[in-house]
Length: 98
Length: 237
Image (tube, rainbow over all chains, first blue to last red; front, side):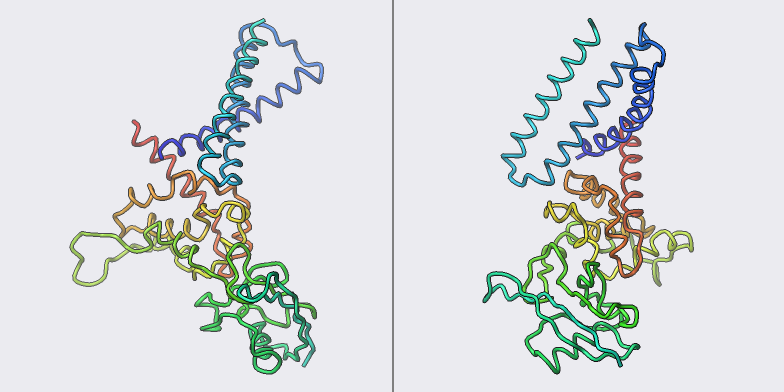
């Protein structure tokens, strides 16, 4: 049960990162901000990617728990969400590394 | 005296397949309460109209119902503050037994899950277990809960997820967790930090709007979340 405490807390942390990260992301990508080059930008985008994936998929897991009531179905959906999250993380890391 | 139109959602699940609306015209004095109107209907127009009432003074919580779309106590709603057309429904999310009477078994079982009683095995003092003013202040608002069920019934998470503990049970947990005289901190906290506990509260604030005792329930739940996180890091040091 300790797991849920950490999950919720980390959801808040990633929420704050996303708020700041999205502002920076929109400024640099869509409003003629500085070009995103160099190791610092790469590190920023890596943290931004992981935060977005964690925050988004944890939110989806929460919604799923509230609307799917069979334990077996919950396990299946949880598996699907985790696999999708991992796949998207992989694709994201690949794009950032090329 | 003024005439009010009561539109009441009526349902007898043992005899009917779906709820029906029924309207009544009632002569009311501006100093009367909504509950008085319901009693007049039962006494003079239709004796089969079913609703709960006990103290009629906002303490027992029996007459909680949905009044013009908002949960509240019929005994605490003054008719002079109401429009001429009043829509009355049973509390949402609980199974209807008949008309405005709902089955609150699940609601009370959720409260039971958080051990809603003082646990302290220490030898009691000669007189009562004393608290400082500050210690009392900490739980004062949560103590005023009358368990009417308005909050849990108004919670959108509870509408979709009946396994969620709900605001009333979490408030009850707060009431004892923050009680300086209680000693079952770990056990009680353990009973609210699971997936169907604290974390299903998304700070929608419906419970706060619905509470006839004006308790900031969401605020209390937020305090519990903070406490759970602080406790998590303290234990993992």
